[in-house]
Length: 453
Ligand SMILES: Cc1cc2nc3c(=O)[nH]c(=O)nc-3n(C[C@H](O)[C@H](O)[C@H](O)COP(=O)(O)OP(=O)(O)OC[C@H]3O[C@@H](n4cnc5c(N)ncnc54)[C@H](O)[C@@H]3O)c2cc1C
Ligand SMILES: NC(=O)c1ccc[n+]([C@@H]2O[C@H](COP(=O)([O-])OP(=O)(O)OC[C@H]3O[C@@H](n4cnc5c(N)ncnc54)[C@H](O)[C@@H]3O)[C@@H](O)[C@H]2O)c1
Image 1: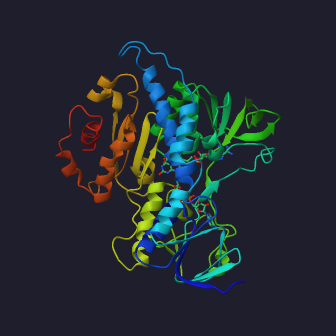
Image 2 (image 1 turned 90 degrees about the vertical axis):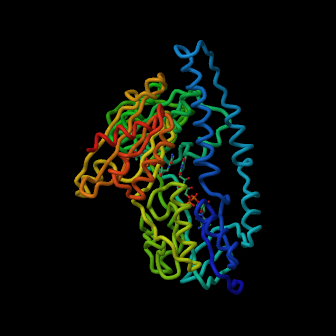
Image 3 (image 1 turned 180 degrees about the horizontal axis):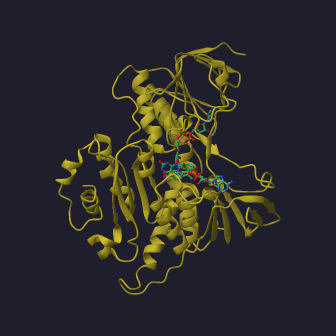
């Protein structure tokens, strides 16, 4: 083994969070080694947010064209996956090549190492034969991988995860989707809009089960309207493959599909990282951190591995907190009260902070304001595609919003206004005095606020 190389910081994993930490620390003048076993940028640009939103954008264009009859004349829509696959390959992922990202990091002064990092002790990391001794410490940003449930017959079959679904140059005739969370729902709708016969199998009683029940209803109605079969409250019991998939459910129904997409959640990549060498539990689901993203002595963790919300914006947020801590710059500690998320269905489902149930479970004096989008002026004007609702969750005791959901056209944009209110704890009294432009979708927030008092 070569002698340990002295550096300031080693960053394990250069996905969204690690790339941000490593790049900023290097730009600040530290001697930083960034280790990535696959592609710099991680899941989001290559198999996650960006390519899937390219699919969603294309599917939404088809859906909007299909809404022309009754609104603006006639339309004939002929879906073609080729431009979607081409945009993903050529524009988004550079054919799954990270040269630009690697150059960006080294251009900021970082040292890039391609390989799998293992922690060997406090401040010590090994990649292949080379050991690094990091005087300031190690940042773990190893992300998550798809969870493959232990269903009889599944292992060994050519099932898809999000990776194969994103890389597909052509579409299957049919697809079974296991899991009706964000990944399952978004990919189901996008594929269905291009003519794929899709069935979603969700084990819990409703889709998007972590969100408001009204969001689950909107999601189920939207998928059904696009021809997706939605099966909730059933699980796959057995999987067989002989050219196509046969999935037997717990209610003995047998479903068939050319492809099977497994979208049953994600697990932090902690096994094999060597966490036991720094006194951390390698079998834990996530790395728990304090409000400065410290997971232990001279060890920080950011992004999906922390379990604080598997979203790109959370990885970026936590990266910022960790960078400021490592550089001793101070500033605000991590605060998760106003955590936003958007499920990119049509209609989009934006949400922030607590759901109504979470607020009740927290013992708050809860008040809820709810407005169906099609009852607002803009919803009426919009006509086809105006499904959705605005829901605000207030803590009456403190007179502030603690959460909200904005489902509908531009639902992901509308949630920004609610996020500001939850984050800054703007008094509801102040919000009630706000002027909301007419006729916007977000003006419905003014109506939902009135329902709170
Ligand atoms: C299909 C899909 C759609 C998504 N859509 C959205 C969306 O619309 N909006 C949103 O906010 N989020 C979305 N996400 C979530 C988002 O992609 C993640 O939250 C984000 O990528 C997390 O960043 P990260 O840096 O924590 O982890 P990752 O992006 O997973 O990066 C971790 C990196 O670490 C590397 N690594 C792991 N272990 C080691 C090791 N031992 N040595 C070296 N390298 C290692 C991995 O190869 C990987 O590149 C989506 C995810 C998926 C799967
Ligand atoms: N728009 C976005 O921001 C976006 C999009 C996609 C993914 N993501 C992130 O990625 C994470 C992972 O997404 P995901 O959809 O894989 O996970 P998820 O945890 O959101 O949903 C998984 C679903 O699968 C179900 N399930 C689990 N085991 C099952 C089984 N054996 N049979 C049937 N159903 C089963 C669960 O009940 C759950 O509803 C999300 O939580 C989110 O943080 C974000």
